[in-house]
Amino acid sequence: MKNLFIFSYFQRLTIVLLFLVLWSCKKTEDTQVPANEDITKAHLLLGNPSNAQANVSMPENYLLERPQFALSYSKSRAIPNWVSWHLSKAWIGSSDRQDDFRPDENLPTDWYAVRTSHYTGSGFDRGHNCPSADRTATVADNSATFLMTNIMPQSPDHNQGVWARLEDYCRTQVEKGNELYIICGSYGSGGTGSNGFASTISEGRIAVPANIWKVIVILPEGKDDLNRITSSTRVIAVNIPNKQGVRNDNWGDYRLSVDDIERRTGLDLLSKVSQSVQNGLESKVDQGGTQ
Ligand code: MN
Ligand code: MN
Image (cartoon, rainbow, N blue to C red; front, side, top):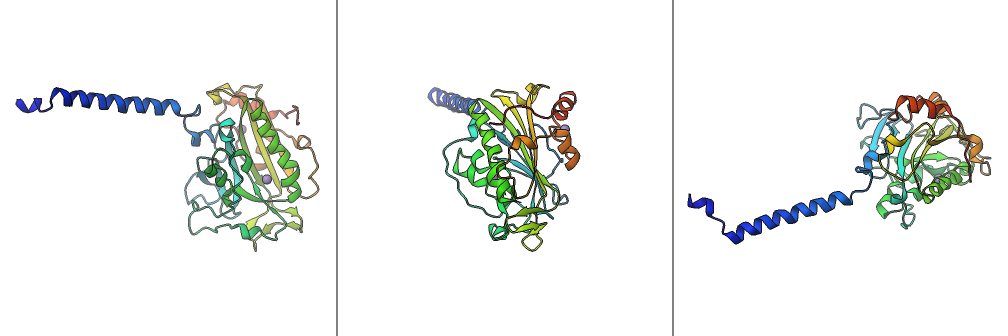
């Protein structure tokens, strides 16, 4: 029985203290996690619009989830179907624009790897779905937006004009004390860039979408976001043709209902919101301010 008392009083005290220290470290770690406990899950908190899955047998609806955003990718179009992300103060910082456009190594290796050079001379911008300026808390966050799976061929007037002002408007809402859930996507075939109309670029490998849309859910900063979305939550839905000549347009003039986007794309947006609230929110067209 002597073996049971192999540890001296001092050794036993040391072991107890060690456990206490480890336990308190764990507590500290828990309390440091931001309001949305799992940042990756937050991007799909309001739903996965096409039930995308990280499954190579679903090449037209292939789910990529990263800390900065989640997306559904189309292998044949070589652009995302949609990209979904949470935007709050926590994502905005002072990191510089990295401009490191590059192929996404998280795609299956035998899929066409879109490179920045595939856009060169095409007459279309490398258009971000999740904007660079929405991800400036760290260099890694900003750099993630330059993965080519987040990029689509976007007409320069669209990208640099009307769309850029909508992106700015979203960040202004964050500055005013809100947090946002944003889904951006594109559909249809063919747009007009600075060299004229094209349905594809890069020798037919990359689709040029006809329309680019965005759905924005705006909540005052807080917790338990899904459950505080009500029929009076502001939801902005916009759909703008991917063409030249829209640079100076007001994005507010392109508002439509979420139902309308769902009809055009076949997606189910905001699917995690209770059906009755979803029905009410999705049938309305936003009438709020645009400045
Ligand atoms: Mn852009
Ligand atoms: Mn829906």
